[in-house]
Amino acid sequence: MRNFIILISLAAACGGSSAPAPVASVSVTPPVASVAAGATVSFSATLKDAHGNVTSGAVTWTSSDATIATVSAAGVATGVKAGGPITITAAVGSVQGSAQLTVTAAVSLFNLTIDNFDSWCNVTAKVGATTVASFSSSSATISPEQPAGTTISLTATPISSTFTTAKWQGTTTASGDPNGDATYVMTNGTSQTITACCPFSSNGSGCPF
Image (cartoon, rainbow, N blue to C red; front, side, top):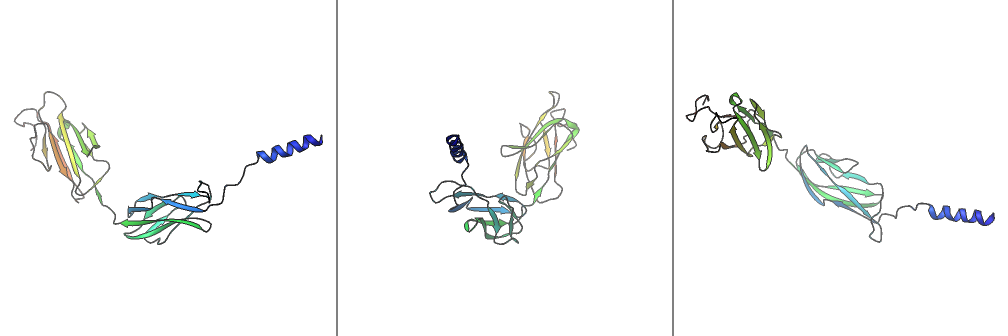
């Protein structure tokens, strides 16, 4: 019986979980970052022990200037106003690591409405390779909104063979591209609208422009 009790005690001792090794260093990623006012950027902390092995611990995040950027308990920094660089610090007890954060001025975004006269066209709008609108209804707005200076690539094709190549109104390039393509460069206007029309004859009959 005595030997049995000793064996149980040894098994319990061997099966117990050990505490994580003490934190000897904290590194923050990314080490340098930039974010616009009103936007967010996430930081992460890697904790290592004295032997360079990853360990764990409760991390406390702080900002050196909360009027420029704040940081949450999860390491997500939010730009408040343009300024910096400031220091974002991750600490486990007295052991710290930090990163530099610069906050830039907020970027103003603007909307663009694309009208499709009498729904005669299939319309697609892209920013680079990203589609921001694709529709055949009477109208659509791009999503997401874009800053001034962004080039919107446009394509309009007739919904049926009874209509002809698209015409555009309000676009940057001249109407009449043989493929129904055009471009539009976003401005800082609060109300921006362009119109596509796929006429029902080669002379443009049926379009209001």
